[in-house]
Every structure is written in C-alpha cells, then in structure tokens.
Amino acid sequence: MGTPDVTLNNGITMPQLGFGVWQVADDEAERAVRTALDTGYRSIDTARIYDNEEGTGRALRASGLPREELFVTTKLWNSDQGYDQTLRAFDASMERLGLDQLDLYLIHWPMPTVGTYLDTWRAMEKLHADGRIRAIGVSNFTVETLQRLIEETDVVPAVNQIELHPYLQQNGLREFHQEHGIHTEAWSPLGQGQGLLDDPALAVIAKAHGRTPAQVVLRWHLQIGNVVIPKSVTPSRIAENFDVFDFELTGDDLAAIADLDSEARIGPDPATFDVR
Ligand SMILES: NC(=O)c1ccc[n+]([C@@H]2O[C@H](COP(=O)([O-])OP(=O)(O)OC[C@H]3O[C@@H](n4cnc5c(N)ncnc54)[C@H](OP(=O)(O)O)[C@@H]3O)[C@@H](O)[C@H]2O)c1
Image (tube, rainbow, N blue to C red; front, top):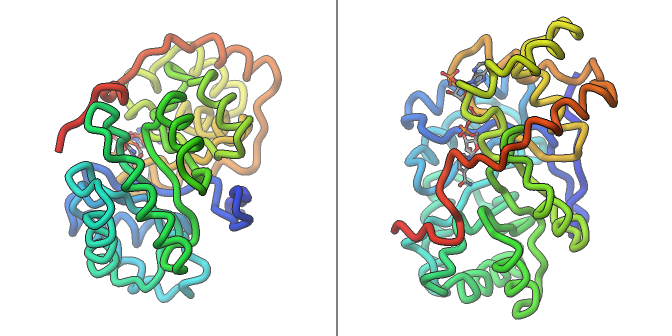
C-alpha cells in the first residue's frame, strides 16, 4: 500500500509519509534512500547542512523512478540566509542533487536574533515564481516569526517543519498552521528513537494492535494530519516505518497519546538558535 498525499496551500500534493536523512553520511544516505525508494517511499527530506545532497541525488537517479513520482525537499542553511545568498545556495543545492526543479525548499531556521529571514523568503518567492521550486516553506518557525513573515511578504509558507512527537505535540503552533493553511510537518517524529519508543503507554497500544511502538507513533502522526519523515539506516526499520497504512488507532489510543505531551524538546529552541 502506498502513502496517502496531502494537498498543500498552492494545490500541489506531497506524500504524507516521507524519509529523512539527517546524521547520515553521503554514501550511507545513498544506500538508505535507495532502500527507502525500493520500499515505496517517494518523498525524501535532506538539507544543505546534512552534507548528503549528492548521495541523495545519486539514489534518486539510480532508482529509475520517473521524476514526477518523486518529492524532494532540501533546506537553506543559516549561513546562506539573505536575498543573493539564497539564490546562490539554491543553485548549489540543485547542482549537488542533480535536479532541475525542486519540490519543496525550506528556510532551515528563522534566526530571529539575526533578522534576515524576510529577505531570504523574498528570494524563495522569486525562485517559486520562476518555476524552479514547486512549493516553498519554512522550518522551526514559531507563531511570532510566522506572523511577521505572513504580514510582510506575499506567499504564505506551504509547510512549517517542526520538532513534533508525542512528548512535544505543539498544539498551539499546529492550530496556528491550520488557521493559515500551513501544513505541519514533524521532524524527529519518533523522538529520535530512544526513550519515547520505550514509553509504557505506547507499549500497551502497540500490543493491542500487534504493532511496534514506532508504528503506533507514526500512525498517530498520520491520523492527526501531520506530514512525517522518520529516519532510519536499518532496512528492517525502513520497512517497518512504512507499514502503517492498514490499521487505525482508536479514540482511546489517541487520547492516551495526547496525555504524553510534556512539551519536552530534544532539539534547540528556535527563538534563540542562530548557529551559522
Ligand atoms: N528541520 C530540522 O531542523 C530538522 C531537525 C531534525 C530532523 N529533521 C528531519 O527529520 C528527520 C527525522 O528526524 P530524526 O532523524 O531526528 O529522528 P527520528 O526519525 O525521530 O528517529 C530516528 C532514530 O530512530 C531510530 N529508528 C528509526 N525507526 C525506528 C524503529 N522503527 N524502531 C526503533 N528505532 C527506530 C533510528 O535508528 P537507525 O537509523 O539506526 O535505524 C534513528 O536513531 C531527519 O532525518 C531530518 O530529515 C529536520
């Protein structure tokens, strides 16, 4: 069974379940992306700073899949923010990926303390208007940075990719997204594996469905409407994480997972993170 699509605010569709490659070296990323594409994933999430755009590109080409069946996301790194820098960084990413057109380009972090995200966004709007990118979005934006972006620029982001898992459910930000037609995409959807996947409440739900805790967590993301991009370099887990389309969590399961929210971040705080 293939992944369902979501429709973004400019009408283009994106697979709801994709594959992330953070902390995967270039050669290993090539192998992992090939395994993912063989398994049925069609959406791949990389970034300039992951240093694996080339390996990702090689895997896309080696798959032999038609370009229109693939959905490729990459992200503009913090040191490349600014209008001209963004135009140059985009060309360099496309060169490394070996693509003519990108499906989704994201500003990786807003860096509100630096204050260059509006100019950066205007360059992304131009690339979008020129047809080089099918959809533009952001990552790690807060309500405050999104609000300013929406007020002062023309295109509402299609996506905000944020840290989101059962221990950090981001209900306020998800509500803001919904009000403004922005799709929520969850990074570290499995809470990076350890800890979250050992939670006793998830074990109970997993047992009841004859599934693994990871499958329960991914199913929860899908049922609450998130786009989700689990990462694994382990072939059995790559398959396990894609095998989530033939069961349904109950209302009680969803309520039990809602109770796990402790607003606990794994990653940095987007209001202050400005590493370049
Ligand atoms: N925009 C941003 O700032 C940002 C930040 C972080 C991540 N991301 C994106 O989000 C993607 C996913 O996030 P993430 O990589 O941080 O974490 P994640 O997907 O929540 O978890 C990945 C970890 O969980 C393990 N794992 C995967 N499937 C498993 C399973 N079925 N059972 C048990 N363990 C499992 C993996 O191990 P193995 O690989 O060893 O199997 C890996 O250690 C990234 O790859 C990246 O594309 C974006």
